[in-house]
Length: 370
Ligand SMILES: *Cc1c(COP(=O)(O)O)cnc(C)c1O
Image (cartoon, rainbow, N blue to C red; front, side):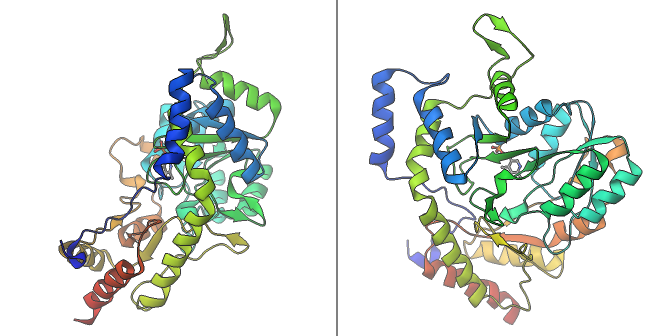
């Protein structure tokens, strides 16, 4: 197939050199230790902690369960928890599976992360809310200082959904270091992955101990302490993470190069961009653009698809529109409801080539020049 017709997908999972992965797999075949506190999960946790400068990183089977674990650990199960409707549905699912009532604060129109003003408004309407789960959308970092001040003022616990934020830092600290708890996803489509997986970041030894219990059925040997989950990561999944981790800087560098090329080639008047927070070292996890209307978005998306260029509406629809929301969670969030109609993520992956970006931007700019 000529290169000009080969499909370009919105994302393409990055894989380590096979030999690197197989070295770990060979060892797993020799030891027959496949899961349950094996050596590679421990090594992955230790190396993640070292590279991100975090004392307690707990590997989990996926980000969604890690979010549920965090809610339970924070004592928020069954309480009111504030999040935003501009996120992947799993943020909300975790809240609802923990029996919490979700309340939506709106996002900031520029950063697309939770608006601190809207959070404050929410606290006026729902003074019984006990926790907040803001999302570092597209790897951008929330206004962590303003959110922390509000949490302190109202006695809220803060769990960051940092599923997009691996590799992003704010004021020299990993995005995963903010909040009372922080959760990342290591799903295959994320910047760093273990095929399926995720992690929970906690800050004290006591919390770390409790989180380990919750992660593995709530018991140690024959002593049962609490109602637990099975949220363990397997040794094989940890092996993927260990093989990929040395590539992390190269992954981020490649995505930065691709993003900057997009910036330089796209017509700036047609493709608005979210605003990155100040003092952010960005991970270039996604390449979202904001179009002027949903009508433009749909026509552009279709036009690109005809040329084998596949984009994704992300996040769409606004979670305020979900059919299974409790009625109290249905208050409108006008910024999200507008933005969710107009955001489109263009293809971005570690191995995306320069000529592919030229093909994408020629097609996208061409749509507006006809
Ligand atoms: C991917 C993602 C999740 C869910 O993570 P899984 O590992 O797929 O369970 C949650 N929140 C956000 C913002 C995500 O992007």
